[in-house]
Length: 371
Ligand SMILES: O=S(=O)(c1cccs1)N(Cc1ccc(F)cc1)Cc1ncn[nH]1
Ligand SMILES: [Mn+2]
Ligand SMILES: [Mn+2]
Ligand SMILES: [Mn+2]
Image (tube, rainbow, N blue to C red; front, side, top):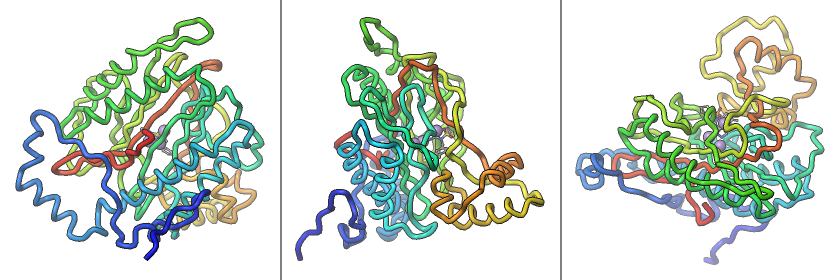
């Protein structure tokens, strides 16, 4: 039987490329020092086998999401060019994710809004309907793509530039994320891990127009644990040393993401909100506003607790939703995530991987030959 090849732009669902339903394991790393016994321990291997009674279970879902992520981002790195409208970049990526993951209601699809934050903005910008802004050739673009399969979210991001000025900034952040990935492990304290990330980030500087600028970790952004259908699992991995004694635990999924900046190294909420998510612990308040009641029903049906954006509401058939949406936010039912920006004129970069803390080894499930 002839091998099925992915098209460009990507349109072929992965079940056609992986007919046996088994998706490739990501890069694996052995645990360090006191956890080294795990690699060979019979008991830990038994735990792992139990979690994998058949390939379709557990790790295979996140591996399918990660393979979609790799194939879509490979296309994105080629097709994204200065002069393109941001909204066309977002649609191109999301069309690819939906086709390859074979979107199916809440069972599989886009994991969260495609982040396309520019320059001094580090996270949580995606174009809203009507946004006509265009990518510039001096822009520093953070591409943050989410894919989920059965609620297992692959959260991975990279930074794109089109001129060499900020190469050292990108190198610093890629190295800091790789440090975070390498030092992560079962029983590792979150505060300690943050210190290793900070050390790598701060060992870099970037020369811009003859001025040497230190690369600063953004001290109020962080990586995070990931739960089923829940992008933020409750644990945060900061980017500067702190005394959080909380440990990483066996079986947890983490997004290891680091952000570097040539500005203050601190972000504030700035600009129009595009990202939202129904809170997992949303209060059951009686909704007076009928439009808010029906919007909440549409949100529950289409997204559950997965993050979404205004473009996805319109795609789901909602219109004239803004009053109802703001009401749901004010009632604490929906959480808004405004764009997070450092000072104007500064530049920020991001690299992010999703890792699994398996009983016997660490799996960097979103690793590719690109980053
Ligand atoms: O900044 S976060 O809110 C956070 C970090 C630590 C604890 S919660 N955030 C979670 C998130 C929020 C909304 C989304 F639409 C998608 C993700 C991290 C992140 N943003 C993009 N990729 N990863
Ligand atoms: Mn974020
Ligand atoms: Mn992300
Ligand atoms: Mn993340």
